[in-house]
Length: 333
Image (tube, rainbow, N blue to C red; front, side, top):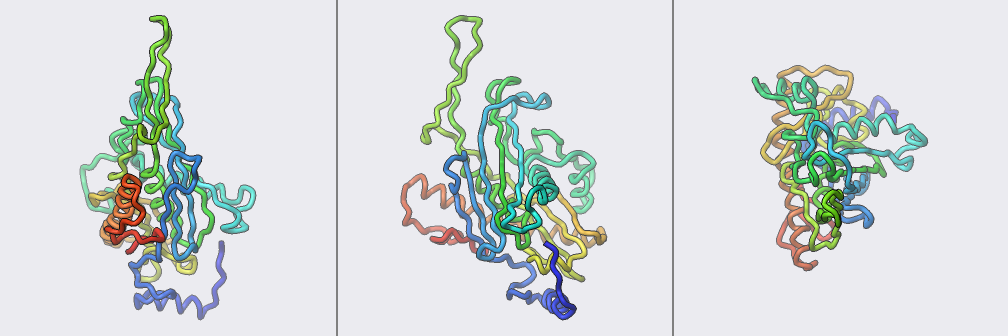
């Protein structure tokens, strides 16, 4: 969506950011209100929906676990793929194939954060911005650089594995889309149930083994999402950067830096958009800021997921021990 703002409106937005009093009353490092729901798509293996600012930005993610073939590079590991579709309800420009280009870009950014960036790509940018030297870039394929332990998704080495298809749908897009998607993806992965697989030998010695699936919820396993990062985008407007930028603020940006940060404060990937250049020193400062903000965001989201898992296990909908989740699914930041 291309916004047409008057000179006075532009000045009002810029001045508010300069004084750390944005149009909606937030400071530069404040998020809008968040409402996170789990299990919103019953047919999926796991799902989640996130609404920012009362639904101004609204995304839904569904994870489907299917049995497929592992990659040649990692024959004992599972695979993961991300795709993003932008609904025409979010913006008429997304009708038909209008949102395909942005969808591919968002899907690749999510995969980089989950699976690691390729050598010489975003990983090297991350190393340069953080000032680290001698670091090894993440492998382009699933393996040690992945946020999930992909070896746990292997079934028969070189033959079968679990393939996680992460499908995201953008219902409304009023800024901070990639950040919202990353939160919903982590929540959907946490909600995912992997059926128990048993290899059964055929009646004859030469017969190939058959796989039997047990999708009893009590027998299903869960993914460990402790290492899954969240993406924090710092949008630079003038001499300052803001988090969770609205459409109006994004229309003023010179550049935006999207940093995937995990619970240990490690940077998983970095992406930049916008035509303006960013000085290396400024980039390092933005990276540090993203790590600090990301740490608080991860604590809030992980607290929500922990409480949700506890309630699901206890079957007690009245438990309210965790301040990070209220009865409406809100996340306090």
